[in-house]
Image (cartoon, rainbow over all chains, first blue to last red; front, side):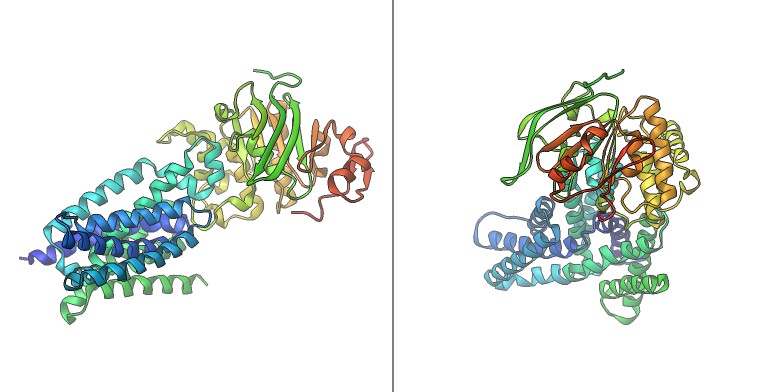
Length: 261
Length: 255
């Protein structure tokens, strides 16, 4: 019988793979991979603000809700800016300043934020898994429904506009989806490693694939391979599964680009 | 429906500015089922005018009607080929998927749409690459696919922004042949071009811009040395070919 926490980690890896395949691929298509790093750090600021508010007022705000709101805010900023990566960079800096400020206000509870910074696949609760799964199903449905539009606006936004697609609204939606995926994966691997897990599988896959469907499926497979290898290795050597998974995902990317040369 | 002398596009005193910088001023023209080329130096407002014709930008002054209506209401009648610089090539979208974008805003693609996309690819001689990633094709092939996308939905008006930039001769010929077939079938064409010479013999109207309308009319009325000098700010030689068309010697230094 597999322990419950291992079972939860296994489910989390599948959730992670779906997000890496969908949101990861679209960060590559939209050429906005930096948003993942920005959204992850904005999430830290949001979570620490939520903890601070809960600590100092009678109001309780779930840190994950704070994380989601802040990461979506940075995504909306990026979608609205003429130079998205610059907006993300500034948002990143502002978020980190806020995170440091809020963490200094919640000293005794700061470890909860550190948990988000590093994450742990083996410490996920059933509640975490349910929230991650529901959010992922929601994302999956949205992306399937808008897949043609999302591809069109990534390929040629002017052409998409000319054919009557509401490019602005869909751009907000797509970048927000990427931000939500970032927060979902962050729960499992932390803010620092989320970039590797969300971007590297899709980036490697994009180099190999000959069609969009292949990008999605190879990215999912790479994320699964990295996730399970991380889990197995961590089990035998007692090291962080997220770190190993991220290392394997980034290693696969480097091998793929070396081979392509 | 046939649009006569001047009822397909009717523009009256159009003006547009970006953050206070005038991009277009007092542009007035009208065309029917014709081939119109928009010419002018870099930054003369050509792309801005195209965007206004398609309803992507709203003019700050004046009025524009396309097919007798406001442009954003007739988008399904327009096939658009954007400048190639604005297209992403870094992910493996297949040629046929690019063409399918032009056909239908429907959620799911059926056999009929796929047939139309394949027909459009055949028209530019690229049916055999339908399955290939767009970004791995040659520059000329990519432009032929973008042209196939513009014609796939059988538009009544084709709008092209610098369609021949970086395009090899055989590809240009394939696009031109397909374009001429469409024109014979009654499709109107508006093209932004730095170099009008490859298409000059088929052009009905030329609109010469330099932030304002310098001239509009039949090619031989517009492409004179004095008018071109006014638009380009330097002397432009014109050569008359055997068929009697006036070819301005510009374009080679651009795009």
